[in-house]
Length: 334
Image 1 (tube, helix red, strand yellow):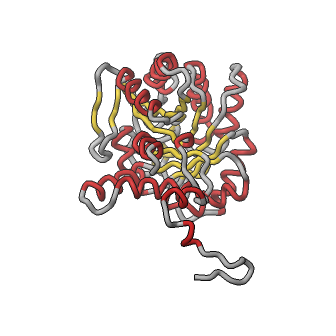
Image 2: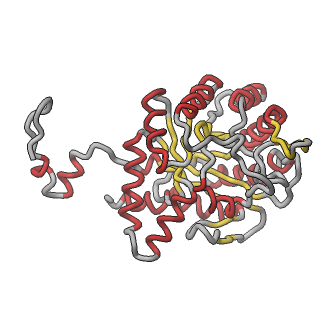
Image 3: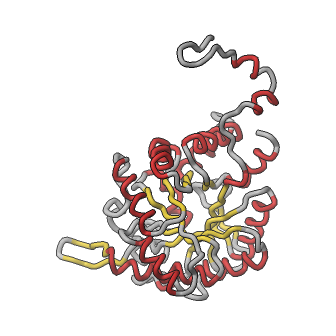
């Protein structure tokens, strides 16, 4: 095939004869340095509780968390993202900002055991609230209502407690309006002016989150999260949300989910040129695992292809439950 018009004649087949030649001219290469592994931590010791809907993913006690993080780090994965599962929940999410909370304890132990590992912490309240929502709830005549502004103070407290424990990056995922500004102000007021914020800036109310709700034990007890997470149909709203988070002080912005939102990811990166993360969520991981288990797809090949698609669309950082395996495959020259 000859490409004519504005491009000169080009015969790509000459550069496809060997794997080495193909790699030499490849336009997009995912690398291990861009991967982040999400991990779920709960209290206890020697706890390694499998998540039914996510083969290979576990709820881990801090000692097991360190072992899992060390394996990933040895494979080349530079960062983890922590989600906490508390022993007690209430309507003030008290365990989310407790000095000896499960995440705070895990961060201290991780940074002591693996000081070079980048530890990112999810800043949200849903896992810690008895009702499972990401904000403070008030009962009204029309039913339960999520209160935006009273939630901001709690999110600031959570972020500060994580920074005090040693978190390298805090990542608010709640989607409350003004949360980045509130967290930045709280961090700065407590001396953590250099702690970056990775904002879940374009987080959609997606059906792909199902397995995560099991892993984090965070399913809402009533209603859904559509009043504060984004409508999957809206891309211009996503761009406005990203712009607001950048204006409020976000250092990294995120698009979540990843694969079904490549158009959003591309537009966010093209529009703002900011460090951009893509979260390959639990549903994406579970679908591939199920298909691979049935022999319908090659797990290694499809995983690398998905990572390449995210990089091609503009992701600088890729958060994936397959980070350790992907790192091993990439190191082996996948």
